[in-house]
Image (cartoon, rainbow, N blue to C red; front, side):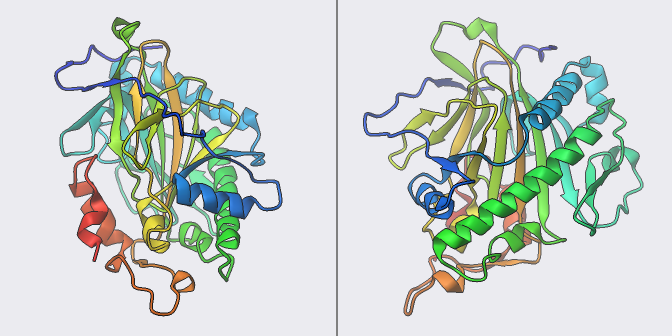
Length: 345
């Protein structure tokens, strides 16, 4: 696999290995096929804002096929990959994360998932848009000019993960005992919902082997959307922050998904659920490849605590905002900023 040019270590921070606290019971595991999955999801979102999902109904072969296509793209010569960039914001990116100075030891492909007509005239820009058809939301894909031939695998993956995420959000509503059961899922599955799919590659960096240190692959942050659905290969690196500020490593599991609570879901539950702060450490051992689907609401959707969760006399902790307003504020900020602070009452 092609490795990125040597990083300037003064610009990409090093991170130490996290130490598990004696009281940390481990990452919650939710079996989506079992009765009571909704209650388990709610407990995990309240305690950690993060959980591992098993028996989710998506074939491992489909996950591996998309991973293989991603690896094929990231193995191309750098000059070929750069024909699909720079990410502005969609397309191929290398080390730079956003436009505000954040950097990490990674390269990535970023796609937008939309139901809006493709009005853009630039083939390069359009190459990274998935149009969701209204008939069962099947993605149609414009073949990228970048040489990435993952359109079929990515299309199948998107359809499967959307169905699974809808089931997760409906189970979450059931666990919260709110009606209608699609109170959350309809925000993420609306024809105008704002979805993003990200394929990340964190190359190894052998010079750090044995030093008990790693390069920052993706700096600490919370996700601004409703939920994020992550799957990776068998390489470690993902870490989450506990309420006391300590960090713990998340053991990889190629057959499972990991679900993050995002900022919008924290607001929708009036702080009952916790938007989990997380990061990725790029170790020196082997490459990490991950796929993350970020489920955002429609841009015009107003975000405020759900009335079904607000008892009589209960006050909202947050000012109401639209997803479009929050997204704009989020992308103006640095990666590690607490973006919700400006919307707290």
